[in-house]
Amino acid sequence: MPQGTASRTDECPGVTVRRERSRQVVRTKDIPGKVNRRKEILKAAEKLMLRHGLSGVTTRQISQEVGCSEGTLYVHYDSRLDLLLAMLEESLPEMLGPLQTLQQRVGLGSAQANLAVALGGIYRFHQRATPLAAGLFAEPALLAAYRASLARQGKGPHLSMKVLQNYIAAEQRLGRIDQRLDPKLAAYLLMSASFFRAFSEQFFGGPMVPTWSKLIKQLIASIAPAVDMSSQQ
Image 1 (tube, rainbow, N blue to C red):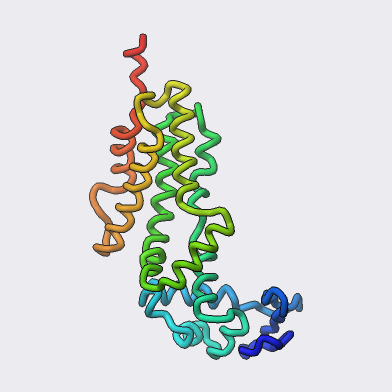
Image 2 (cartoon, rainbow, N blue to C red):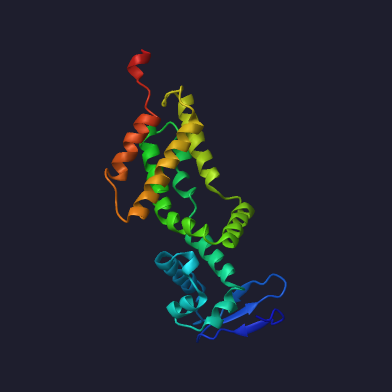
């Protein structure tokens, strides 16, 4: 793809984009009726990845799924690697999302119920993220690029683990979770249980028994039990 081109027209009708030389940023001109097909391209890439795996996704397949020429993809993205990295960055929601309200629930309601709600969100994240993450190991260059992307944005699973750990420690200080518990270990075990459950269901192709909502309550009762207030009286 020539790098000296300041602007060019998308080969799919109704799309005009501009590539800036210095930053190589592609933007659709703000013209009424003009539709940027970038999101369609990323959705098609995700759909094909779930069907064929990351290593099985080609730019030709993506262009056929979108309904435009293969050359159009390179108007939006410099390479297949660039396209797949954008797909990962946009398709994977932040794991911190389900934990945002957890920090605000310290001392409110039941600590165990709060953990169950937060871990329900984490489990849904793992269900979506597991097939995407697994495919990365078949594409070392893409894995390295995604790691670098997370580092630049200050993201990563360790941050969610830290939020979970801090919540458990805060509830311990209030006497609502057994203080003999190691909060870091508890957070690790709960997060690991969520990931392994999501991985197992993806691997075997079906839901497991008991349901996640029932399992997580049992896990929390074992890993982060409530304090028996009667024993303290």
